Length: 107
Image (cartoon, rainbow, N blue to C red):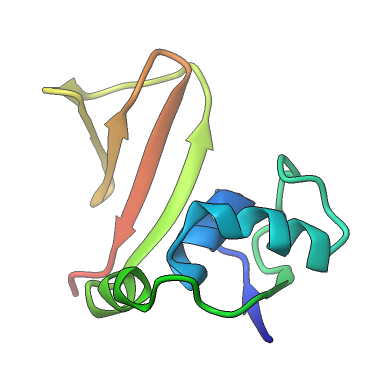
């Protein structure tokens, strides 16, 4: 079992994809940490994660420096072709209430 640090705007679903390679791991992560799956996580806090479900997905996220972070809100600016751009961060708009923020480290 591994312990990971929560990044800004991450949810348990983001952690499940990033570190386990499958959204289904969210249930085990929630159980290991005594949290509901919809818990709002504090950046800088820690959660325990189970074993990797799909190493290929985990490797892809690591190799490409992708940190999934889901942001919920209704304020969306700078939309062009379904993509929001702000401060070198890119967000794909999935509907009027939810967008997915993908932070990449291209430096």
